[in-house]
Image 1 (tube, rainbow, N blue to C red):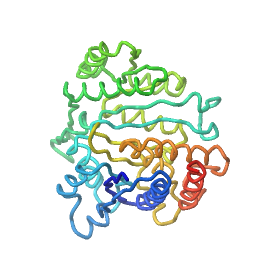
Image 2 (spheres, rainbow, N blue to C red; image 1 turned 180 degrees about the horizontal axis):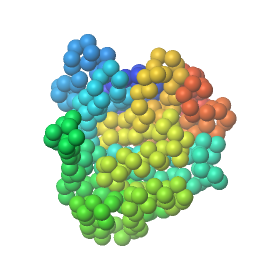
Image 3 (cartoon, rainbow, N blue to C red; image 1 turned 120 degrees about the vertical axis):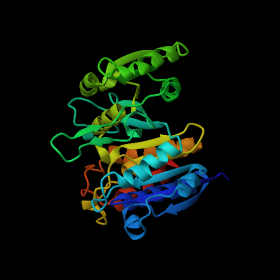
Image 4 (cartoon, rainbow, N blue to C red; image 1 turned 90 degrees about the vertical axis):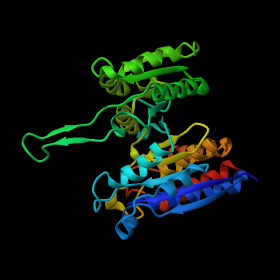
Length: 354
């Protein structure tokens, strides 16, 4: 029986609650599809930092790097300086484990949850591949004359040929693997941010190896318009870190909001860290109000990553059935209880696995 090592970081705010329901679904998937997971729970987050002064040690990151995958609930707490925990834990995992692919499936399961008029599941089904280890996120900020009227702040956008090519190649492979529109769109701003010409040239050069994949190109400002107007046009989108961050949050709203949006931080052939893309929402913490469906879909992504494709598809289908059945009337926090939604998915998963 396959056995996978999984790290669990509940984190802050609603993180532990949504992860709890994700584990509940994972338990059911294990029982139905015949595999096991060995789970290591890590305490890292605001409470741990305030008690010990420790964010996340290098030893823990290295340990997760030897596992099959990890689940991350949410990081961020108003009691701690903004960015301190996020950089140490989220960025620490991404940068130090070379999780250079940020994978964000954008899929609408029921038209009731889309804010766009006359758009349904047949219109919204694409994937954003966001580069995850470069751009402005990996550069140190510089401040001069801080706190004065003459203050100067600077943070560079950094791109390498290696980092650009590997994520673009991954995106081409994904467009081929999906086998849908077989189209890859590059999202950048190379007309104004000329350093991104590296992206434009690399996209074209690598594309010569994929004659079966149609190439498309859009500047990020225009794409924020076209993603709203014609989301059905897109199949796979590849983008630098900063712009990918922006268009994936916009895209999350098309599928129903942050409560349904999942993401994976992946080193192909290596570890992956899977998470709901929403924040820690401290105001809802401990109230059993948070929507765990994004975490459940992150579990589906994790299962696909470790090679449990059948279980992965079943978990996603269980969520889809819950949404289409009308049992879930809203994806907003507080409308349904956290454990109620977890149970709905588990019950549906059991019917699929019979």
